[in-house]
Image 1 (spheres, rainbow, N blue to C red):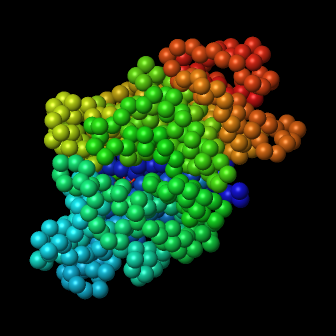
Image 2: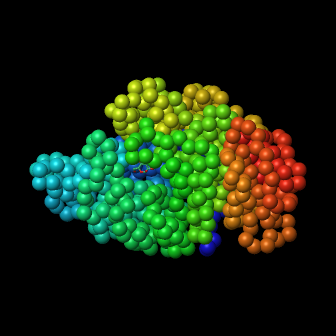
Image 3: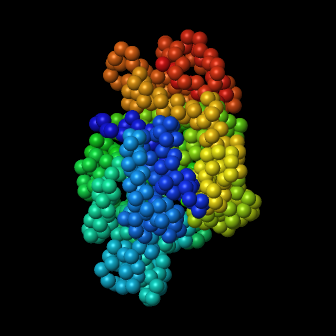
Length: 564
Ligand code: GLC
Ligand code: CA
């Protein structure tokens, strides 16, 4: 595997609307991000990915772009952005932007022109299709956020446009070479400005099953999940390769894809030495909860299933490339709430989760607030929710017969807004996020969980994350942490994480050849024997004590240790 400049780094996702407001309008912005760069640096962050800040009507929080060359005024202007690039450069940090090119906003001039002239040249940048002879939509696919993927082009008899997400997010037609050229030009424009790369949104969706055929309905609405057509759509790789070769590829920029539904055997094409992308996110633990039935049919899983899911990804990826490892992002509930049972949602439990994420092979990709152990919100009314996906999932739960109370519990567990509540900086007014009224309600626990308190406490979750980042860059351990093979043991033991990270080359004098990572994800102690001698030096421990006698080890509830 070729070595790349970003392999040893730590990355961090910023959800700009909720990170730091600088001007009192209740919305986070670019000057706010700049004011927090030193904080990010202190956390060991090298790469920041900023969710979309382009001009947008914000129907899907910026994932509906109406001008790809401008910042939305709520976030600042181009001068602010250039200042961000300078300030990050000074700190040896890199900025990655969201690339949302499966669709744009219905307010984008190109789509507006297409609507004005539905058979004219601009319509070819989208999917405009005749409906069925009986006047219904071309096919029965359900959009990700509910309802048909088709909406009628206003003023036409039976002409429809495609949108896999909301109706305000028309899909761009990648079959049109002119569209591709425009996208590449835009990407290069940003790269020339000094971007380090892109996080590429919903990219597997750019290729559609070419016949737009119906599939068997899987809910009472008569529609079916897009997964069916995705599994039949062929040739998306050609689009990816073309995009890479015209943009980030030759520049060695970083490209991490939001890629679900990768087909059997195709992983090396995605992330190998000549892969379409630099990396992809490991969504294996998230996927455990995917269901066609909606959020209220989400299956539960155990700590062991959680472990086995990402162990399997590690094994699959081993010879090919590097995952970006996550426990949460802006589309998911908080990792601490999702992956730890209530009794484990303590500082010890959160630190344990951090160890299991940081010590995998791949690049740790934090999400804002994760480093202080932010947890889910409890929604007591649907009015507290902004997210389109949550509102739809709430309705689906009600239609399926859940009570209001039950449906609110479902969204409290699953809502994307769990991750989107404002960042908790202090225990002061609005958690130090804004002087004004926050655009989305704060999690009421900010008095206990906030950066200021944890910064001052050497035993805090925040300082533990800092220690993990330092370990990744420590000359003695870096090679092992970043490139060491992942070798699990003791998989027969429930809720126990136990794996070696073994250097492939002989370690030079003074460097560590192998680490043993242990974590006990349960509320009772766990005893076991390991199969190697040594590992007597404790490199990191989330508790004060540690019991090891030769090869015999006992971990306390939620204990995590890293041994050398
Ligand atoms: C991706 C984004 C999500 C957005 C969707 C449509 O999944 O992460 O936030 O709603 O794409 O752009
Ligand atoms: Ca603001």
